[in-house]
Image (tube, rainbow, N blue to C red; front, side):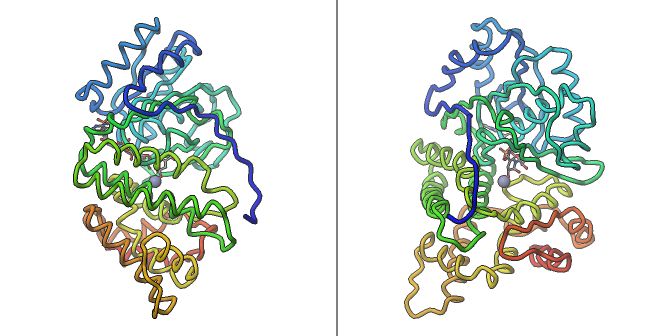
Length: 389
Ligand code: NZQ
Ligand code: ZN
């Protein structure tokens, strides 16, 4: 554990069946005006909307709605939400949905009292809020991003073809509370479930594949990966297996709530490649990651050989006997690839709508990170995208 760090996570979690009732404990802490934020309508079809609105009404709240937050929320939608939250004089932003809805609520929170343009300030210049922000609460319905317990927010600028995330430094941007009921995820389509599972895996591996010191964070990461792989295979057979779905939900939260980043430089290059694909295709986040992962990890394996060897043995159970370090490391990646195929993840960017004419643009849209085993050059980025086609 050689790196220095600070750790603070103030989000209060309520986990388990029926945990939505805990809104009754949280809502009285905030003023009367609640802005209820949700997506394209899944919560109306599965009844979550009715449950939440009933509790809001019982608590005497004045409710204003922002609906239609799309997957990969756009800047235009953010501008619209800021106007609504301002005119509603919001005291609390209650996000009911997946990462897109929760990320969006955080972006509204930091923009509502901001006189500058939020895209330029937060996403291009990576500045922190210099204005009052609004508290965000969350009811999670889609598992993967960890947005329920972190300060991340990702917004897509469709005009500039850029999808950029900002992890706010101030913990008060994290949701004040999050409701995690695994049964709320049972209505997710299989495609979204497995995309979420890979998003979780990728969050863990982005942090794991950095550094070479003996770090407790890596042991926690391995435990999370083992649980996720096991539960994913059970959920793949039976999407209503509560035990598996609850483990996946809990793993997602711990995969990206800053815990396993402690003492690590962290990589995040897979996310940068995936976000570029997302900006060009609007594809599902987890699938953009799966589609570039194999090409990326094969490329950086020689630079992080010792860690890839450890990953193969500790996570994938590869028997090291009689094998060279490279053989062990490659066997680990093959096992990972088999698991990805079994889940039916996107294994190339062509199936997500990328064609070779986009490669230069994708490289322009890819931010280069410096915390992993290899800082990529532009030709390497192009090569990874080519190998992902
Ligand atoms: O819009 P509705 O109708 O609600 O449908 C959604 C959406 O189409 C549907 N859905 C959600 N819960 C459901 C459901 N359908 C049936 N039953 C339910 N219970 O699922 C679709 C996808 O939802 P979305 O919120 O877009 O998915 P996800 O949670 O994967 O969020 C993706 C966004 O989060 C960002 C991504 O870039 C992307 O913009 N990320 C945020 C991060 C963070 N805050 O730290 C980190 C991640 O790496 C990621 O970048
Ligand atoms: Zn992600």
